[in-house]
Image (cartoon, rainbow, N blue to C red; front, side, top):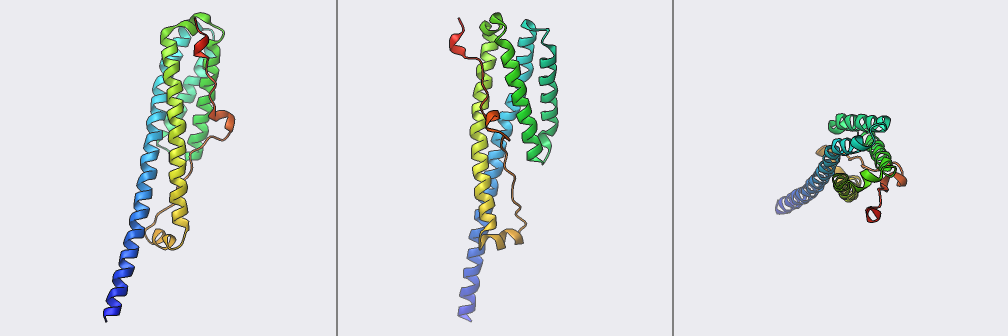
Length: 188
């Protein structure tokens, strides 16, 4: 009988430890996603200001301005969606739209010298950098969580308590991960 009690306590302790690890990893993934969401929201908040600054100097670049505004609206609409693949693709398109918008500034020396525009551009570069770091941390957390769910004996606990794998949030191309912005050092 003592043997049975000891075995039962050992199994209970093992299940508890494995369950707690899965919960910790799931919470780490959720926290990492929250960091990405904050940076995406920050980027979404900067875009109207950037569009307005460019519009003051390059109003006839209307197609680019409207395209970026529309992409921002679509990305915001997907912000509550569960499909990270679709959201990642839309955010990538938005990033490319921002690249085109920033490229417009190259044709307007007055805009490139505008302190408001330069400040917005610095904020956007900083946000993109934070977003890249947050994406890496999130994807690393997802990788660890998914690996834990797939390995023995964690997979028995994960299946029993309905832990599900998470999707990665990544760019679909290496080019999209590097947002080329105006060289701020050459502005006089």
